[in-house]
Amino acid sequence: MTQRPGRITARAVRLEAAATQSAPALVLRPWQPADAPALVELHRNDARNDALSRWTSSAVHDEADAARWIREQQQGWETGLRYGFAVVEYQNGGPGGQLTGRVVLKNVTPGTSSAEVGYWIAAQARGRGIAPRALQALTDWAFATFPDDAAFPDDAAFPDDSTFPHAAAPAHAALTRLELLHQIDNTASCRVAQKCRYALAARLPAAPPSYPLAGHVHVRTRDH
Image (cartoon, rainbow, N blue to C red; front, side, top):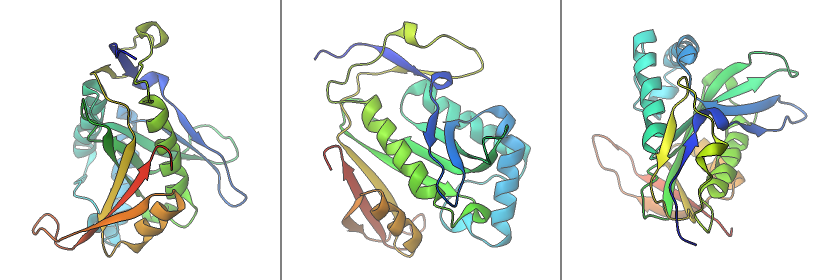
């Protein structure tokens, strides 16, 4: 089918992961400026036990840093090359919800059928199955949003709203392959990948200083 222009509006995207017997439901939504205080608190909590800094290069020390980081996530939507989501946990269907981490679809390059996924979950939210449920929701959305026929929705399906970014979608190929990369000593990410059917496909050599240790590449294909 011939590709046609369209756009993916952040306001129109809201992903959900059902509650389990031991954990509340999750909502995945694009980042908003109002998330800045909660984002700072997540980073501060993780910095106390060095949890987040081991796996991410993001530096969020105060609300100014958080605001800049959130704007970068919004710019990803605007360019159509990166789609970042806040992961919010809702207790018993109550209002508001608690920010627990993030997931992202990135390196979405025009003419390329593969992209990369990533995530991090706050230290205090781990052990409740948030990472695999959030990653599975993102995976399903990615394959559904960039389908085999690579058809994009009409602009009319996504009303304009200045509060939310939208992507003027380039001529993307259908996504058929998603990759998840992690440092080799991050065994928790290996387990998350396996739960979401991302098979171990390759081992990457260390590349200091950015990548001081070897890594794993896990792959999920559309027909897997």
